[in-house]
Image (tube, rainbow, N blue to C red; front, side):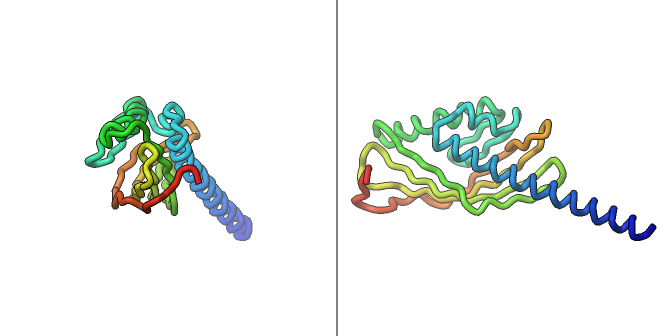
Length: 167
């Protein structure tokens, strides 16, 4: 009898570990979807990765509350950057790295670092922006969504001179 109880406890432990690993994988895919939508200017898709009442906190770069406001924030971000630089266009590509998550039931937290390359018009300088996202996640109706994002921006610097587009 003790052997059966031990086996059942072991199966419960393994099931819990598999659930956690599946959650970590889903959360990493969710974070990747965020960057994919940002790079592709897919504003409805970007809004869809957030909960209805999510909070985006970009510090001095602004904030937004709720899926609709977050979608609006991102859809107007690039035109604002163009206006601030006095440019006619901006090319921005954002890449996430080292995504780490901690899962606790239907809630999770995560951290990832990003590297972003920004070019205005067809200038020869690409600006590199580097920082960290701290996220909170929630599972709603069996699907993970981003409930909060806090940006910690490290720097923006010209990356190189004489950079050419296209190569």
